[in-house]
Image 1 (tube, rainbow, N blue to C red):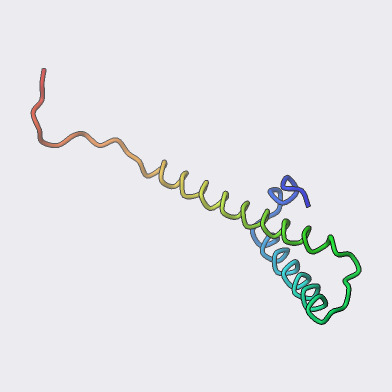
Image 2: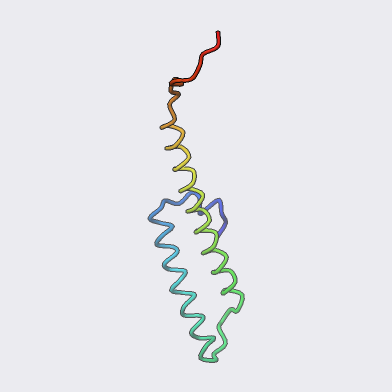
Length: 86
């Protein structure tokens, strides 16, 4: 999947998609461990990359949420104490 498509998805959709991909990756890895050749060997790389994209997008969203919360909580307060030069 493309990153643009993943960014359009909601948090719950991303989590369910990650779970599906991890299950599929586990099946393919077990086939490889047994010695069976998977139907499409390139699928492993694609699945791993998609999982990484999803995790990256989740982290980006979390960072952006923290930044906006932090920026909203920033209120300019007057300086207390110290000398005032006029």
